[in-house]
Length: 72
Image (cartoon, rainbow, N blue to C red; front, side, top):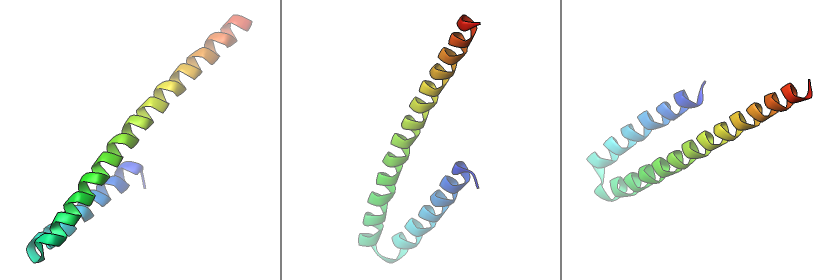
């Protein structure tokens, strides 16, 4: 299962939980909404970290390729 699929599964579950909580108890809904927002922030930070690491990885590969060409 890909990371995207897992994330989508979490989102669907979170939406269902929030929907049920909103029906039954506003206090629980408020807590769940706060958790949901926190998870969104964590996901955003994780995404930025992955993008940064991908850029660094690409630069390292380019440098490695350049070094290999220079040493030949």
